[in-house]
Image 1: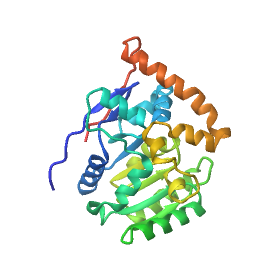
Image 2: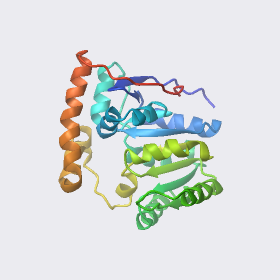
Image 3: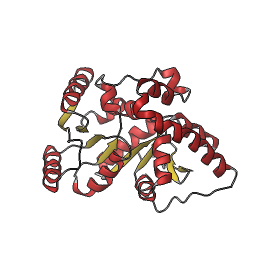
Image 4: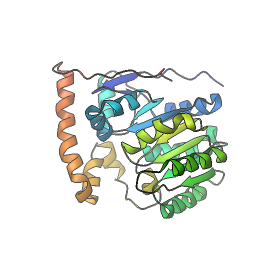
Length: 265
């Protein structure tokens, strides 16, 4: 196997975001599976960064990840501004489809964790129809409440018994990031990947923003129009706050601690 490229990271409000594109992300995941690396991926946009600004714990979780992918265009633009010209968006739903369709990952075993049983059934059927050779070796829809230790142990045992290479986690930010770091050492899969709403999008439960809005950095506006009652507070606070904090960081008016992080892939 060819030696994988070293991936640098760029500080965005204390979160070390990986300077990658989709090809580099798939290469890295392939190498982790070959090496049985046992790490996790945070697919992070403005929401994840702002949650990390407010939580030192969550910021540490991101910075200990094997990859922190630039899920939103604002992060892509900031990384390009920092000199990483090759960077492109590595969006959770796109990363999921790219991994399922990658020839290099043709033998990978996939497990789905998150959303509802009905959505998982639809998602699994659609993925198997689109990628005929895909190996989905299990799926769990956990309840929308804290798990008891017995339930948690049973889910871990079920995932490990299926022997997946990749566990896809669709719990939304920051729940999925906390779940990954809490379970990383107890799961045998090479990589855990938190992809947020990707399960619901690919199952057809949630509409996806048109590509032109995604590339313009306006996906948040589309999502706000679709689900204003749930999302208005998030965007009313996060979008202006993100812009303010980025300007303060770029002008040297404020520094953001990144804390410790693991070895970069």
